[in-house]
Amino acid sequence: MTREAALFDLDGTLCDTSAIVHLTQGPDRDYRAFHAASAGCPPDAAVRAALEDARRRGLAIVLWTGREFVWRDLTIDWLAAHEIAWDGLYMRLAADYRPAPKVKAELLRDIADDGFRVVEAWEDDREIVALLDAAGVTSVTLVPSPA
Image (cartoon, rainbow, N blue to C red; front, side, top):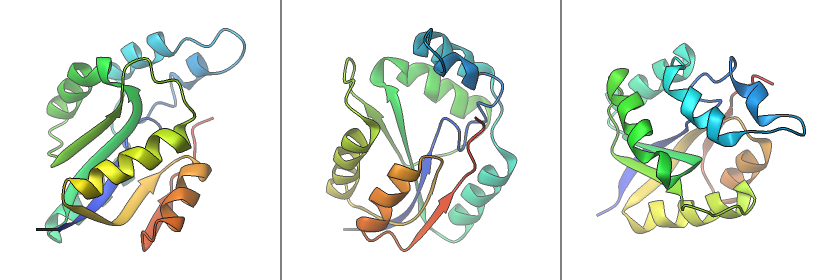
């Protein structure tokens, strides 16, 4: 059975990382510090409202992220702290340092294999927006990056 879903990216989209995005920039990038600090970031109000609207319309809520799986507990705790209910959470495998479009293309297949048909999505990465468009997602919203 296939269930229509709304897909939400986490960092820079649902999770407002504007206060910590500097940790991922420049020659001294520190993704470990970035992900650890994300626990204290708030949800983006507009994206959160879109998520709640999608749920009210009966769509499954599917979350995906370029975060490695080692951050799963932190991610689930963040979602619980902000009372964000979800039906699927898809993450990059540990030590998978491939470019985000390659990782998310595989995650998109995993999402479909699990019975979700993504009909709308929210994402802050233009390359991923193009991936979603090419995959036939009918409504893709580009969320402005905090950078």
